[in-house]
Amino acid sequence: MLNLLPLILSCPVATPVQEPAPVQAELAPTDDILLGPEANRYRWVPNWLKVPDGMELGNTHGCIAVDSKGRVFINTDSEHAIIIARPDGTIETTWGKDWAGGLHGMTLVKEGDEEFLYLAHTGRHEVAKTTLLGEIVWTLPWPEISGKYKSADQYKPTGIAVGPDGQIFIADGYGQNWIHRYSKDREYLGLFGGPGTEPGKVKTPHGLVMELGGEEPYLVVCDRENKRLQRFAMDGKLVRAESPLLERPCNGVFSKHGLAIAELRGRVTLLGLDEQGERIVLAHLGENPDPKKRAVNGVPKEAWADGEFLSPHGIGADADGNLYVLDWNRHGRITKLERVGE
Image (cartoon, rainbow, N blue to C red; front, side):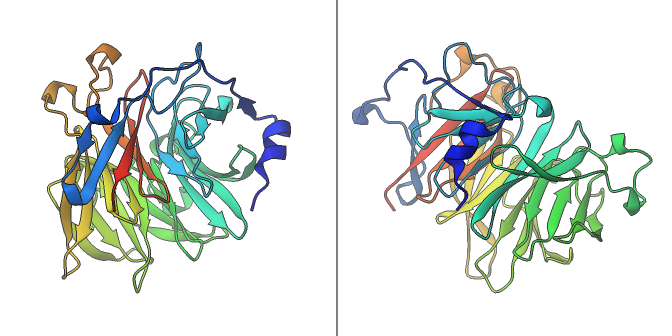
């Protein structure tokens, strides 16, 4: 396992954060806001992320991931491009001043005894592999070899995933709507998707998530503007286009309780599988009742309400099945949903 403490003390790219002043206590149990049906119930945790006085999150327009220690990695557009929070919500450290503005896609991968971040940056038109504290292992530029781009500026990757064999998938969600494949050694293998609405085509392939644990691994694509998920084999061939009535799915995460999807239009949806392997809705969580607050970046803090999401964009899960949700909001909003019962 990667020994993080020496790195935190010595790594020049990470900025330790002072312990924050006490914040408002969580609601008493009798005042808990519970979301979802009894079989899939979560408690909304107020003020989970404890932001120190003087620190601004900035625009939260990225992803969330959780490491093997339960620490939560959060993207922002500020100089704190990656925030590392302990399970109790205190901020351990931040890094990424040089990554500010455009760090959009993130996945955390364990390789042997170490864990690494794979990052997609829309402004840099590249992806990168780093240590958990920001030391760059490699960078991968725009896929000129694909023949789909006139210049790097047309390539704006939004999502990244890594298969069990080390294969790397990159979604050009804000660019030309292709999904690119690379070997674990970064050899270009080809592309699939492309703009369109028919099965296998995509319209803003925003986030990517690996589906493991079955007979074969699959890549699940959050096909945002087609309002669906699509499941692909490791060679890029379409397995199934799925449409369980989603509201602009941005990103997803598998936990032991199912596939949780961050939907930009104001909710999180938990999905399971029926006997035929079709996605089914288990629960809608925190759905915002006000259409004017959904998929809107500028909702002010005074208009936020506990128990209601705004524009869910990133989502992560810990080993206990708790969910962490990043709302797309220029004031910065992170929420924890604590799993209640089994």
